[in-house]
Amino acid sequence: MVVQHGQVGRVVVAAAAVAVLVCATAGCSGGGAAADSRRAAHPVDAVRDAARVLVGQGSSRASTAMEMAAGGTRVTIRGEGVYDYRARLGRLRVVLPPDPAGTEEHRPITELLAPGALYMKNRGAGVPVDKWVRVDTASLSDGNLVTGGATDPLTAAQILAGARRVAYLGEAVVAGTPVRHYRGVADLVRAARAADSGTQARVLAAAAHGLSVQRVPFDAYLDDDGRIRKLRHRFSYDNGRTDRPVAVTSVTLLYDFGAPVVVRLPDPQDIYAGKIAES
Image (cartoon, rainbow, N blue to C red; front, side, top):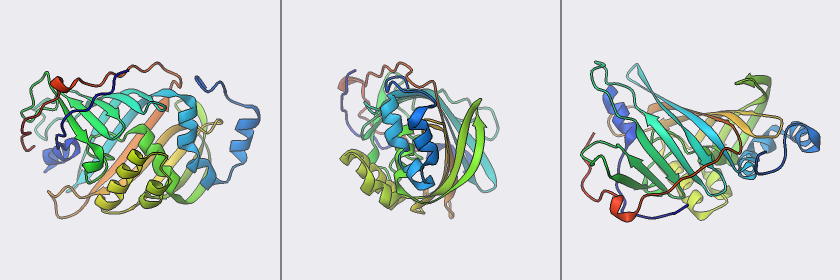
């Protein structure tokens, strides 16, 4: 696993989409005293603990969907991939929607998620097809909660550390797995203060400063081991193209815990250093 750093490229995939409008490694499993303890936990404690539980699990597969609404039109960006919660590395294949006429096809974008950085291939906008774009996520106005078209799974979980009001809504089923449904509001400033690393704190602080609303409504679905199976956030994002903030709903599904994850970040010579065209 090689971590390299290249030059910063400012790029906004989510804004481009809006422009189209205008116990694997932890050694534990279901049941047992740990599961019983989590079931009995206070709703606030249960969701605030979710990121720590994911790190204990080591890795998983992830499926993402980001729906944006502006001017009465909705588009959805979808992603599939894997994430290593201990190394904080992930890989997603992100698919953008067609343009309103349905005539233009967007090539799937490969995204590599790393501490403080987002790498993108097949970005378009004048970037050669064999080059990557590197984005410093703390430099983005939303901390990359929206920009990349998919919310980093660990960051999505760490937002829950800022939970203030949480209600337990009962049992449900997600992809055949029994879960407990929690609904609440998380404060991004509080989540930044609770972050377990300086990099993550800067990312969440950027989001708290840049998003239209610092308090993020969420729905979290946790299994008997306290692992997130489904997580929905609702963001309000000002992309500078419309008079009103864009409503963004980000949904993350996590499954196949302990799945192997191999992520090799690009070498410096493979990172595009030129100007990126406006989308």
